[in-house]
Image 1 (cartoon, one colour):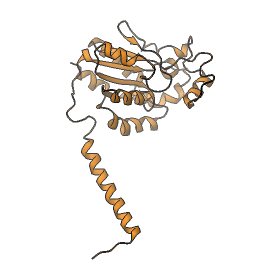
Image 2 (cartoon, rainbow, N blue to C red):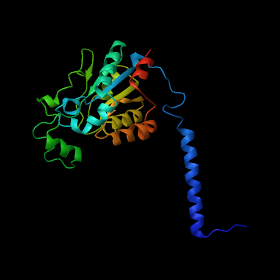
Image 3 (cartoon, one colour):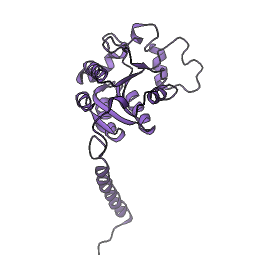
Length: 241
């Protein structure tokens, strides 16, 4: 009969737990989509949530462009967002722009709990209202029929805005979250959407982050665990029927 010391037994139990956890994860994570969820999108009940396509983010000369440039160019972000927006409109899919707060003088003064994003925004005057940096990228500006939601103050587009109200007024139950950044505003918005009962899709070639490493971590590790479906721009547009 094999006997184990207390330390040896704990180690054996730990190894067993890791192996069991691996097989459990494989069982509940069948790939880039939840098994049995629809692969087709009804344009009347689907919306694109376009997160923060500002000049400061994705235009040459923007304050944040040097930080997102590598990952944005790696996925052809601007051209893919343009293709997505034009293709979605042509198919009757609703676009809702979900902008970050455009910095204004006095923002965040005397706030009780400042987040690092608030500090950075105030210091650099990110997306400042009335400036070029706070305007939409010229290829990605809202068009007639698009909605522009109230500005969000931190990462998710849902809290303290009218995004949920706009979605419900348009009869939307499927959302596709795209824009910037992969692992902050896009991911946070997607998490909220799932929790609020929306079928949520993330597109790996329509998002970018402050580094390629952060972007890859988001799309490869987080997105499959968060969204109902993870896809690409071309795959999504082909599935709109």
